Structures are given as C-alpha cells and as structure tokens.
Length: 61
Image (cartoon, helix red, strand yellow):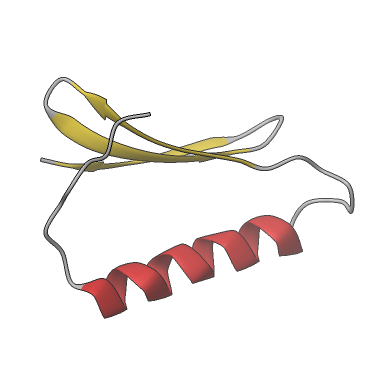
C-alpha cells in the first residue's frame, strides 16, 4: 500500500468526511456495505465513497 500526502484544511476535510459518512449510513439500510477508497488517478488524489448502487468521487489536484 502506498502513502500519499495532500495539503488541505484538516478541520474542513474532517467535517466533510464525517458528514458524508453520516449521510451514507443514514440513507442506507442496516447491513449495507460501504466502501471507502483513496487512490491516485491521472496525478489526482481521489477519495471514493461507494455502496452497492451509488458512488461518490472527490478529486484533489
């Protein structure tokens, strides 16, 4: 597994991730699998939050 380093406002990033995860859990049935991936794609850092039907992608140059 590779480590990546990105510069961002830690407090805002943390609030955004917590909000996304809370919404994901709130709007899906109990037992639903949630997938979280962080990876590089074409020189961009991608955070992907997904469940069976929907996928959210966030890019950072």
